[in-house]
Image (cartoon, rainbow, N blue to C red):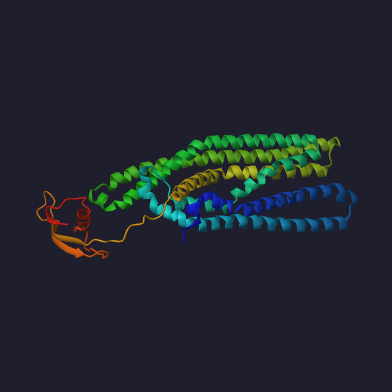
Length: 389
């Protein structure tokens, strides 16, 4: 049976999970609305419970909050599991086609083809979907809703939160521009190091026989140190922006609390609204902080996805196996002899055999016994000194 990914491509596999992704979006909407439970509870405690000193009211509010947060925890668990299973099932559908392309890649792509094994790209995409980074994408669109709630509490509280959100957004853009070049360079150096190691493993006996282990080791160390230096720079840039954004977000939470306290002094907002605005603003900006903290994963997953799409698109152009006619002619070799210039003993001497149409022959022997030479002679890639085919 032909793997559906090989004929339909990556797009059809992703589209088959459209309902699951829409479900994650719906669950994210409900989960984000439930996050207003804490601020609303705080508002009610400060403005109603403390004013009325009603213990039954406080008890009922606590019970309701407990139920809502249990429901929120279930939604968080469900949407994380959905994304993890989307990744696992997509891997199951694509792995056959990706493996086929991995086997086919060396003869069809050559030196200019994909530099990352397709199976590794598939693992990268699956692991990305199972992590926390995609959830931030579903949570970010709800930032305007939280800001609107802050505006409802007071205009200047909303302005403060909006300015803080814009600052964080600008920092996120600066993080992307600063990391883009370093991320590509680091990926290129890592791939170069991996290709070099693969080549050494393939030709390890030759390298050791020629006494080139130390020189190849020095070359590897240079490549390895360059890759580590670029990764360190990438980590410094990402960590620096992540730390700045986290600090700005924490200060913004305190700033909103300070603005709320100033407004509460002049009795423009209640103490409960002051606390609620601080919590809502912090929750609104939390997905942006998570997104910046996982920016490297977004870049790696995006690159892996684009390479997979290209690889599977190439595979989709495959016309299938070439149909060959049944063998009709016999095959005979008589007294075949082959000798290499400068070598006293011939590689092959007096080789003779005969095969009827449809028969096969296995040629066994140790290394350098002439098996490959015989194959080249049979297809006329090399000419024998004596004998007939």
